[in-house]
Image (cartoon, rainbow, N blue to C red; front, side, top):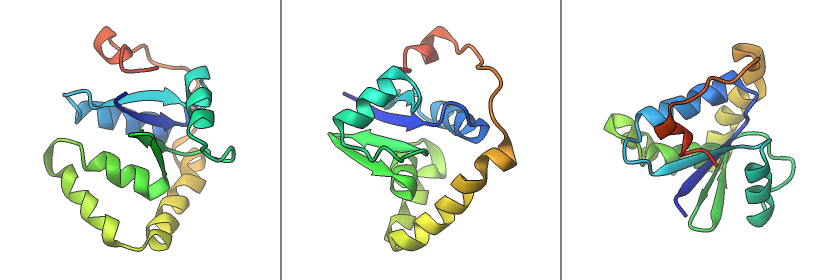
Length: 129
């Protein structure tokens, strides 16, 4: 299976992040599912992701990555200079995750919750589980 990004389907910031990834992933390396979806819930259980997880998860080659590790591993596969962001993997996880957690804790307050979902094009739609 390709790399799967699980995201909060109710969060505007998360939705924009998915759109950002899609735009910079023309080879369709990533597939997507919301954490709230049936597919998302199944993948969380299959891979033993903690139930309390409420932010981005990357599932790749049978392993899961959370918070900054997920974001950096995703960036590594994007087109353009975004690959260079992966260099921050050398920053100790507690420091990286502190920054990630600050954004994650405030994402709904800063960016709001989705009231409705945009209907993606057929090409993009088939990338969602």
